[in-house]
Length: 194
Image (cartoon, rainbow, N blue to C red; front, top):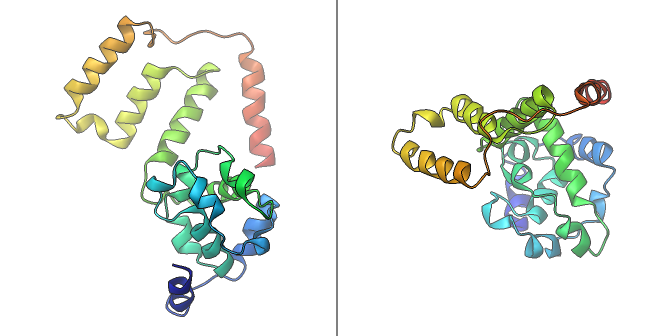
């Protein structure tokens, strides 16, 4: 794939400042990556990604900004740090993935996945109630994503919901917490630093 990327570089518009932007936001040393593939071979989520981690790092190095930000790889990253643990050059790949998410959100890119929508719905629930409320999270996400209109899947999801409720895994009423003001302050501070 690396040879293919090098030959495709002339076909695709490359942004030479993209690698610098990612390195600046992540403080990761992407120049150290020599494509040993240790990160990808240990990644538990690589099978779901459009590009395994080593390929994504190479595309960042080459300046394939559009291809990188339109991929689902950094959204699927579990942040388990297996890649960084295996990397012989100590590249903090998780920080690169976080930087790519930040850039993608800023540029309103979501790639080929609904994970940014789920991410924002989850954070909205925490902002509103101080912690997650699963039933509300599922409901709001299904409405926002349009999945609620997939009638074929709805009966199975409802059966699963009833099972979870009967086992005490879902609450009908959102839980109340102390310290909602502190949660609100965390979100305000994150806006200032983001």
